[in-house]
Length: 196
Image (spheres, rainbow, N blue to C red):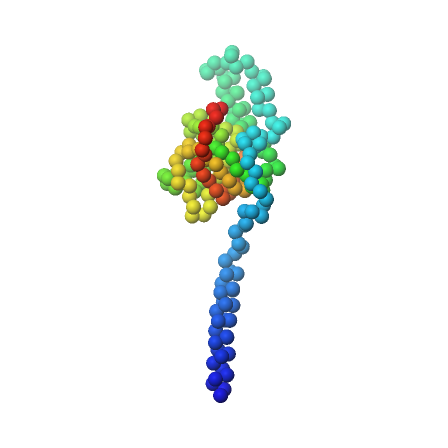
C-alpha cells in the first residue's frame, strides 16, 4: 500500500519540480525587454523639432562678407573651421530624451555588410555625410536596429524610423550625432521628398 501512495505523490512532485526548474531558468535570462507601449504614445516629429529655438548658427556668418571671400582666402578656411566646430557642438532638445518618436529621413549605413544594416545615421537630406558635409549634430541621429533584425536597405534609402529617442552624442567616422534612436520599426517612406 505504501507503494500506491508514493506513486501519486511522484506524479505531482515531478511536474512541480519541472515547473519550478523552468521558472528558475526563466529568471536567469536577465530583465525583460522594455515594453514600447509603456513609454507613452509615439509622436511624429519633423527635423525642426530637433533644433533648440535659441540656436541661431547663421549669426556666425554676420562677421563675414561671404561675397568678398574667395576659396583661396585664409578667411574661408577660418569660416569653415568655425562652422565645423559649431556643427559638432550643436545643442539638442533635452525634452526629447526618452520620448517615443517617428520621423522620416535618409539612411547612411555604418555597417560594412551590404543590405544588412544594423546601425545607421538618419539625416534630413540626400547626400549628407558622403557627397556633402555632414549636417549639424542636432540634425544627425544614430539609429540602432533591434538585435538580429537588420534593416535590409541601401545608402540613402528614405525611411520612417520609430523608436525611443535619447539625447546621447555618438561619434562615427562620418559625423557627430546628437541623438540616438533604438528603433522598434523602420519602414519605407512613401510620398514626395521635399528638397532642402
